[in-house]
Image (cartoon, rainbow, N blue to C red; front, side, top):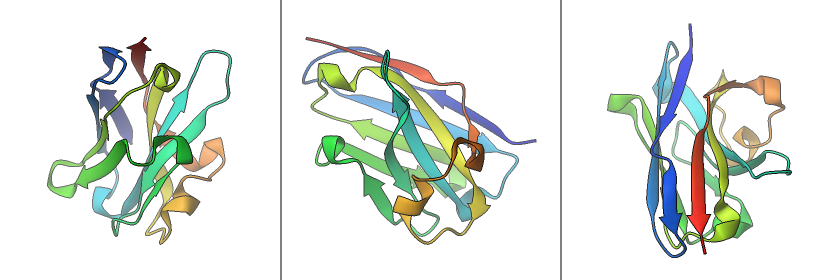
Length: 129
């Protein structure tokens, strides 16, 4: 059974930093593309960043230069380092594991339908102005 669990959310002032973590079990982590999504109040869930098994990465334009996705395969853990946070980064952040192994392009990992992932429960990130 696949389990995906996020941690690391919280409240931070604008300009601050947070690091989200996500552990995934029940799958072959080092063959799995991973993704971070977020959902702001009243808005649709959007892909923030994705990383393939081969460390190809993708970022949505609004976070480029501020967020960094990384993975530690030895720990089955995905990270999202978020710097220079803005109030518009507020939302529930979800970790997702691609159901397809060995996807070559991170942009493809970010564009699956909702059923194309194993989802975590989400962690709240609130950035105050």
